[in-house]
Every structure is written in C-alpha cells, then in structure tokens.
Amino acid sequence: MVESSKGLIDRLWSTFSSMKLGLALLGIIAFVAGIGTIIPQSEQDPEKAKAVGQLWQTMGFTHLYNTVGFRLLLGFLCINLIVCTIQRLRGIYHRTFNLTPPLSLARVPQKNRMELQGELEPLREAIQEVVKQKGYRFTHIGQTDSWSFIAVKHRLGNWGSLITHLSFVVLVIGALLGSVLGFKGYLMEGAGSTIPIQAIQLSKGAVSETFSVRINSAEDRMLPNGERDNWYTNLSILENGQEVARKTLSVNHPFVYEGITFYQASFSKGAHFSVDMNGQIIPVVLQDQGQSYFQAPGTDLYLVTTIDPSSSAQKPDVLYQVYQGNGADPIQSGKLTSLQTVDVQGKYKLTLDGLVGFSGLQVKKDPGVAVIWLGCAMLIGGLLLAFYWQPVVLSGIFQAENGRQGTLTVGALSGKVTVSTREALEQFVNSVTKLLR
Image (tube, rainbow, N blue to C red; front, top):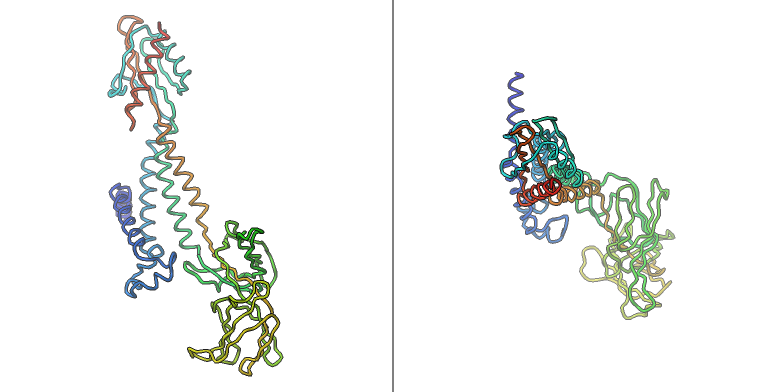
C-alpha cells in the first residue's frame, strides 16, 4: 500500500514537472482567454453579455474567467510552475553558493578556454589582484605545483529565471484570490439616500459585508471659466446605523473602507420630493430622465420625472408623469416649480423640494491586488536579474611542467549569452597578462 502511494506521488510529480504540460496549459489558457475577448463577458459588459445566445450563456461562455474549469486550469498551471521551480532550486543554489575550484583539467569549461604560461606564484598573485579589481568572488585551493581557482561575479543572476517563474505563480494566486473572494458592482443613488452594500448591482462575485452606504451629497462642480472641475460625492459608511467613516471622493480619488474601494464613475441630476399620503410624509429622490421611479405604497401608480430642459439653471422646473399598472401612456402629467404641490389621482400630494445630484459609484473588492503587485515586482526583478545581471564564472587550474614553470588553463562557463562570456574571459586573461609584464 505504501509503495503504491509512493508510486502515485512519483507519477504525479513527474507529470506536473513536465515542461510540455506547462506549455499545453499555457496554450489552453490563451485559447480560452481568446474566446473571452470575442464573446462579451458579463463582468466587463453586462448588457452585451445578455444579448449573447442563451445556450452560450448557459455553457458559461459569458463568464469564462469565473468558471470552475478556468480556475482549475490556473491552479494546474500554478502547481506545474511550483514543481518545476522546486526541481531547479537545488541546481541554482549549488551554482550560486557551492561552486568549488576544479580538481582536474577536465573540470575546466572546454567551450571557452585560454592558456597562460608562467610561474605559479606570479600567476597566482596576478589572478588574485585581477579578481579583486573586477569584483569577483574568489576561491582557490592548493599551494605548490597543484593550484586551482574559481571566480564568480553576478552570482545572484542565477536566480533571475527562478524568480520570474515564481512571479507567475504569485500572479495566478492573486488572480484567484480576486476571483474567489472579491466582487465588483455599481450603484447609482441620489443625495440623502442610504443603500445596504449587499443591495448594489453586482457584475462579479458576492458581498459578505453588512454595512450601509449613505450619499450625503453629490455635486457636479464647475470652474469660473465654465469648464467642469470634477464630480464629488460625500459618502458615509454606516455600521448598525452609526456612521463609522466619511469621505469626499471624486474621479481619480477613490475611497477605501476595509478593503472595499469606491470609485466615482458617473453623475446625474435628479430631484427631491415630499409625498404626503394621509398625513404621512415620505421623502422621495428620483433620477432625471426617468431613470428611477416611485410607486406609492398600496397603489399601482408609478411616478417618473425629468428636469425641464427649457427652464433656467437657477430655477429649474421638473416635468412629471404618472403611469398606472402596465399602461404605456401617462394618466397624469405636468410641471412643478420649487415648493409647488400637486394632487396625484387623489391618492397623495406631491411637492418638489429641490434638485439633488445622483452619484454613480463603482464598488470593488479585490483581495488579490497586493499579491498581484508583488508578482509584478518579482517579474520585473527576475527579468532584470536574468537579462542584465548575467553570472560570470571563471575557473582555472595550474599544471606544473618544469619545476615552478607551467601552464594555467582558464575557462568560462557558457551561459545563454556566449558572446559576453567569451568577452569576460578575454578581458580577464588580458588583465592578468598585463600584470605579469
């Protein structure tokens, strides 16, 4: 039983350590992402996603990035990268910290080699001086007719590819955190309105928080020259009816509360009314252009309003229409000026109190953002190490031929950039030769 379990683990390890599997997963993920760019996704464009055929919606093509299958693909890719990284870790550690001078000529790199003739002591002193000047980390063994050395420069460059691979793991984890634990939504509410956070219109995820959001004010401010300054929303967070946070946000200046970010996305005009139903006063806030409506309690009467475009900006009038049931034509309509009251079908009295602003806010929670930033930093750092901090390893061995006289064979490890490795070897040998003169 133990051997069977060990064999299964070995097979799984062998499977996930395969580079072919990693390339296949990348290809499938790229293909799925390509479909996601062609078919509208509900997270980015809900309206266009609804227009896609019902079959495609049922199959999940309009929310590909939130499907279990896509998350499994990312998870398998993450495991593949981790296993491949673990397999390479020992070799990279050895090349960075455990390099030892060669014990025989066969251990000196053969592809890039050069020879120096001379006595052991002058050669040794010259090499020690050059590696010190050029910033190499130097190790040598032997004292008499058998002497070898190894010099390493930019050794941390060995970790560049490893850090780059790990950065993709971190990015995938960040994306999964945002997809599983985060949400994205939108709300459009008028000044004075309070809405539970769980009541916002969601395009992704689910809300577990229970606080409420109150729009204290919403303004479309203009500069003295007539140009728009910005949209401003003064927003409060309510916990159990008590205000626990308050801030004014605007475009490019969001408000963050317990990991949830509120972005100023849009602005609309509206009006504030008082509805008197048998002595009970009901405050009502309606958005301009009939974007919201009021249904009087206990009736099938629906009220929509529009700010009269022909009225003055200082004293704007409001046009109202009252619909009954599913009727397409209004049963009552008219115009209201500030503080004017009208009777609506004998059911209630409607008074225009004044204009208000409606604030459109994007609401987003993404616990993976910090992880994604970390992944980006690791990716940049890994690429810089891999391409601009190439490790240089020079090693050599002295072989005596006639007493103290002999040949020093020096070689350079050939990495991905063989030209620069050869240049480093030639510069090193030339510097040693100059000191020997």
